[in-house]
Length: 523
View 1 (tube, helix red, strand yellow):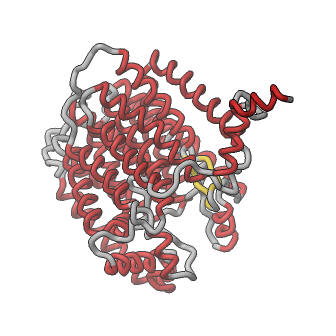
View 2: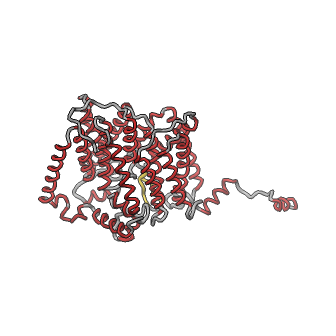
View 3: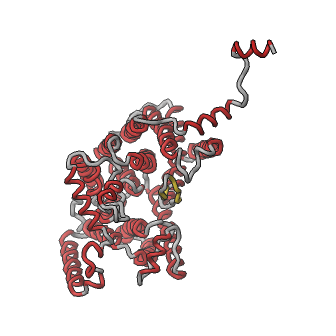
């Protein structure tokens, strides 16, 4: 007894339980490790690190910034969802630790594979773009690009190892202006998240979308985009689009949809049936199909070999059928714009403008003669599914705070606060969302980013079918974001910018012989 008392007084008696048990008890008791301003500082920090990965020219500096972003982003996410009742992380921290270790080991193993075959990075990223997994957290369900996150994390780790082990300190080529503006927009978004009325939505947007997509852009831009890699990604994407189209045909045949119970309820109410394939939203499925069709149309227009043209035309027929089944008007308009751009570059601008004017007149006459067919008897708000009200509400929010807005990621929360009876929470018009959340400051930076991207993608594309296809697809995507949503929240945006920026910098891709009438400048 005396010896026991002596050990207790001297501190030699150790508390019962293992170190791991005490750590788990501490984590369960105190919850998130970060609180107060630390998460907000973390969001700004991860934005700065990601910007360094985009615009950095020294390979080792870029490697360290990528590594730090890969560590900080998951830490911020873990802090945000720690107390989520759906995930139960705070109740079962041991499961989270084991799951995290398994995920890290899988990423490291795959990074080793990509280090041996770096040419797999681009096809794997392109293949992972469409696949979303619904996950519930903090009372919301998010369709997350988990396969893409895995590929980007492994590819980033492979790039980091390669850069740190290499003795080559050659500076990368100068970055495009739009890449600097992309980094500036990320930093501004993080700063404006500080005073947002929905900070955690801004944090999730940064961690789930901006950080992984920016790292993907940095990885894809450094690939050697020769004809072989471009064709491999094109046919892989076309094959996936055909596969998704057959899933849509099965939905149409059985009158059942996947992943979206709300869409199933709407299909039971309406006289028409809308398909979504493996996508949660029919409009996102339609956007994907429209962009793939634009690239395939470029193949039909510029390719001289009949066998390739026939294969591309047959694929277009399948994708067109699926696109019609989505009943996505915004996707159809995006496709029309992409077709117009391709035609203007392949032939002449004037006939395209005349044809476009004729189409507009025919459309206006059809709306005037049969307004009920297009739902105009319900008014503009009813015909647009409530989006007109969202746009007007967003404009009023912008008028309340025209300079700095309500903060990043705040549109849904603030709109519902002002209009509690509505169930909608997105303006479906990206400039309106940015104006309401970030004011004139964010809107000016967004406009500069779009203009710089268009100038980079369209400058000097005459005679280059690959750059023409990328530029037309990006412009179509830009139109779709004006009518629906998801500009920088869509990985397709970053993918097109990465490939288009790389092709604009190198200009080493092969070009097919062009018709002598192809003399129009792109911008």
